[in-house]
Image (cartoon, rainbow, N blue to C red; front, side, top):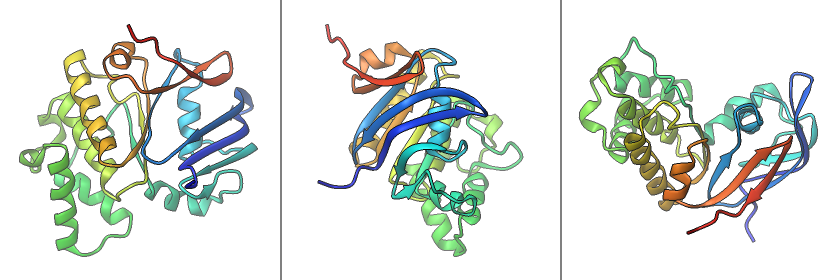
Amino acid sequence: MSQPVLFLRNANIYQEKNLVLSNVNVEVNSGEFIYLIGKTGSGKSSFMKTLYADLPLTEGEGSIVDFDLASLKEKNIPYLRRKIGIVFQDFKLLPDRTITANLEFVLKATGWTDKQEIQLKIDEVLDKVAMKSKALKMPHQLSGGEQQRIAIARALLNDPELILADEPTGNLDPQTSAEVLQLLREINQNGKTIIMATHDYALLMKFPSKTLKCDDSMIFEVVQRTT
């Protein structure tokens, strides 16, 4: 049995001094697609932030892509983040530069130096999200759905073992949301492990998958009713 991509055991998750989620026991294996649901304020974002080490894990055990979260040193956080891709609700594209320059910025920041390799990688990820024709556009020239596709391309740049998508359809209309989710599902079918936080229950019904729920300071698996 291969080592899980992520596990938390008896973990308590805090936002500053407030206990947000208690006694968290979660295991995610390679290749899974998992939804994380729950009301606003139920702890979804705190859970995600713990995974990419924005919040420290101070109580309990945790490991993500072979990094021990409980003993993770600040200087190692950038190395952890290279092995996971993060997709945010609000795209987080740099508004003053083209799509290519946005992606180039990330690659250079994570140690890429060869110009030709950088360009090849940018072409590859834009191809995966069907956005190669938009490479020289500025972010404001793209629709919300197109910007989110670029954000997904950015998350793929360093070939992550795990993608964390935090409300990736939160700012999109239903049609575009479905297209973005379809894209994430395709990336998952090509072997990437994905955890997606969402409050869009229509998407869950349309594309059912393993679901974790944050509620009442707990996190637990829910079985979706299929009609």
